[in-house]
Image (cartoon, rainbow, N blue to C red; front, side, top):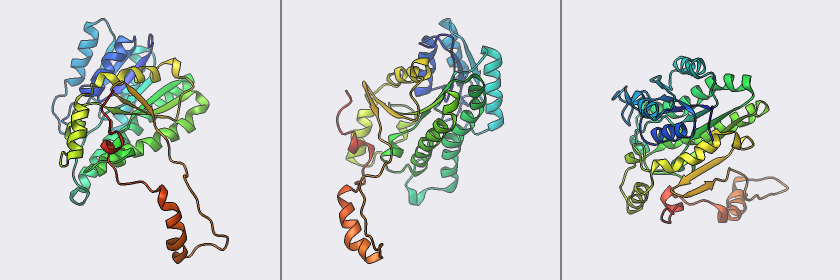
Length: 301
């Protein structure tokens, strides 16, 4: 499905990103394997991780290019996009998958840990997408695929930084979809359920979290690839601004925020009438404080 395409995948040296790189290569794409080679929390670990994946792809007869540019460095990202175009003759899709975690309860979270996670996930998605946007606009086509998380959309304990970044990516994706639609550029999000370095950091401090981790361990990263390959292909030319999720053999389409109920008083509101009328009328539609495991309570199919 990706014959002749060029796909840039960030964070592709390990986990979900690695599986996506190998699968997209098997589908016919030339792959830019981007990975800065850091630990889960962002410390330098193995700067050769990207090259290892490139070697795997080339050994199977594919085409691939290694990049160790940090997604937090806009200039380095622009250089990587330029190198992809020079090497393979173009760029057709980007998968914003790079990420780190520095989990901790909000009341104990350091500003530096909040900043670092947003820089990689949210700023990284912006930097790579912005660099690719100029190429996509010039060719009147292109697909941006952003990895988000139910930790943001639903909630999870001790991940305020990660959750905020992943929710920010939803808004970024929708804005890109709106702004670039006239050039035929698509932007969509995928929330993957899979056991990886990223999910291995989830704090297990309740029976609910234990159950969530048990289910995640049953789900393999390669299950995410078919949807990503489709979104990177020309077959998805009319799909943009959507939020998908993959959970083992299930594919979900997520809702997006819309009003669910309203109340009205012709004379306007006071704090007292808000308390006596508005909130009691709206309360039936309030959302409970839930984590992802509460909403996805059944075993993976």
